[in-house]
Picture 1 (cartoon, rainbow, N blue to C red):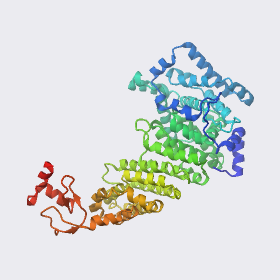
Picture 2 (cartoon, rainbow, N blue to C red):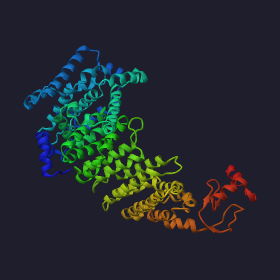
Picture 3 (cartoon, one colour):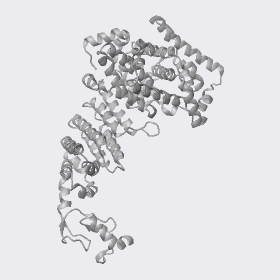
Picture 4 (spheres, one colour):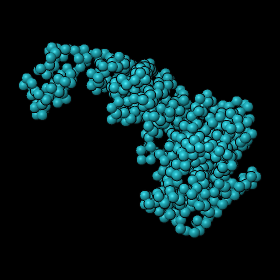
Length: 590
């Protein structure tokens, strides 16, 4: 995002000048480093595997593995927490830098470890600990190393994880104890996860606070005095996440950060407070907040999903400004966003709850906004997984109408935009993309969608208008596919799908047949379709009321090869065997 000069000056005076200077230098130039840093530890591509959702083990296992009953270990960890809190309370930058040198990666790791036990929650419930972790993250952000950023190394990431847990505990307050007891009773000690219970409480509080703010009173939302940490330090964290948003995305896609919506709720409040002072803060804070929320949406866990949706809905008024001001960092960030979308669609239902079709279009719109030439490597998987997802969404439906059809159409609108970004050449990528579409039964999906729309479009003029938009969008998608993909690739990829397509013929003759014929032309299958439909055949049903030779599709028995002019004749011959053909008997014997 490129801000006008007056806006950057305003932001620099309101936030941390040192950090803002560092962000301007590194926002577009962050790269993953391969070596372990002597102070900050492993780089992100090495540390991420240690902080997955699977690493959040039951409390009973945690106590056993870490020997938390050892008083000496607990005392050392509490001493570390006090040291970080002391940094949080310190205002002198020189003293902060000096104190930070005494907090090692190993010490941070011990604090992160005991956070898995509810016994540690009282000592972790400290706003000064949150402030201290932010200042420790700034020591990485303000480093002279151009490759260093808060999320690039394990040190900064663990600081962020600890401050998120601590902030969540401060936000939830007394509700934590009741939630912990309820979760312990419901799950038992063998499956009890204090951090997951905390995450649920925090998300519930965030969702409730955001929803109730405009209904009751915005006094608490807009009162700086009710913030858990001072606004200035909250803004420092805001700038850390925005300046390091590329690796922030990488971190949330590959690790689990408990109760993250609590911190995002604080950022949301800072934006709401700022915009009361000046509309400039819609650009300064609203636009970055909107993008941070959208990035988190790609890796959000199920327990935080509703709270995040509430934050995004409230900040949706920033969408137009974001479209105007947003700017991709680089091609690698664009690829990361596309892979993040694939991760969101494919993520396991056990923990990463998949999106609905109502939210998928917004997620896809976000990543497509940053698509650019040269980032087409993830395209084939993105197209295939999207069609598979849409198949699952309409599976079992008797009709598709309302917002659902509108969002499906917008998904195809986004896919058209991605096709526009496909450069000339790239034959291998294009072949893989089309083969994936063929395997996902794209054309059959369109045919089935048209069939499901038949009853819905008769309900109102609005539904009829949607149907026209459906046909127009489908035509645009396949026209673009035909222009971008070489003819021989289309012919060979969809060559084996015609037999399946013919089962929709009778349905589509009543509506959508022109669109369907257009699809076959775009996929270079129209000549074969004409041959199947128009070639005269003799129906095997003895009582067929047509002449012995007629044009139409072949309905062929897979058992004996008998051909029929319609599904009705095939069914009648099987059930009644008129004329002594004994079709059913012959197939049974075979």
